[in-house]
Length: 397
Image 1 (cartoon, helix red, strand yellow):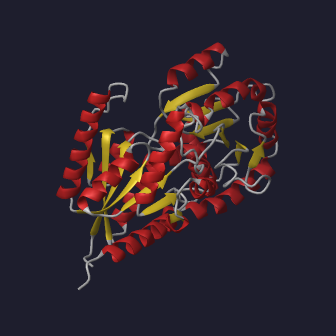
Image 2: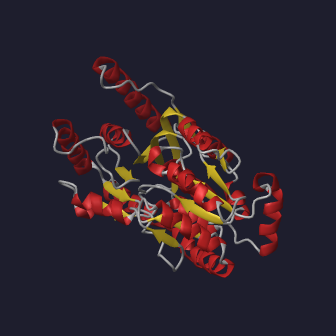
Image 3: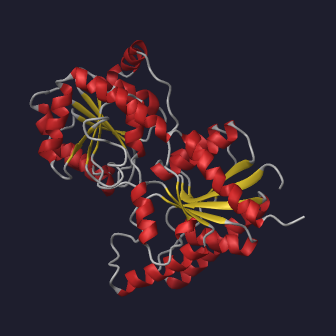
């Protein structure tokens, strides 16, 4: 088999979300540690902040920026999808792609159709345990049709990758899925260097303007979308402010919920306490400048943002929801509270803020947990899947 085989990472956008960042980290690791596989990233709808990271790392990239009309206009939708399909085929031919790995909506079936046309393996990657969109009732006609279509596509895939245990369980329970094709490959972070006390103090000085006069800075990272539950963190801030009137909450990320979150902040009179920092490329340096990592998410495939908080040795707090319970072990490496129990969450924050010894112990334990999610291990497992598929399809001599 030839060396330097090309793998296309196919996804709809390059927004700063967990799946997009995972693709960037995986491709970056393959570029920094050259081996048998060479990455090419293709976004068929639009670019975004991750595009700059890919360009920085000199990762071959195609941003097609093609229209995608709603199915409510079937003729225009069919035309757009034909254009997208043909464009992806062209990308694969120009880059001599040997295998396609897909991520997020529409990528799976588009990748499968392209793979079938070109005769190359296709790996579908699942970043959420919700395989059917939440707005689709699986018992109604559209839900049943969606299930039937996905069963057909999953059957045709060469491999199915789950980024977390709950995602793996959902796949295994889905009609018609072959268990032999399902692989658990945890999504991953690039483990930042461990910071000394002096380095952490220096980072606080660098970000002194953001910290202001606060003696308690909470931080969360995630796209500004409803599923991330940022509004729950904002709602609990008045309770946190009673014993800590100078407490601040940093929300790192961008997305469609920015306007509504700004409105909520203004409605609660929290303009000085809650700061939407937007998408940032310096998250690894911002996190050590905070005190506690919090997440209000309603569900995750795997809570990678929490792992990033742990990597920065911050004590972490989250609700007992899918994906978060795969990372946080209550009282061992962080704190879990019952889902939607805002009072318990606020009390957990206050408890950690008042107990520096416990906070530091949880931060140290969290750092050890974060090491399990280093991108090096995910790369190793992913490339084992590539090898098995490409070896099995290699022409005999």
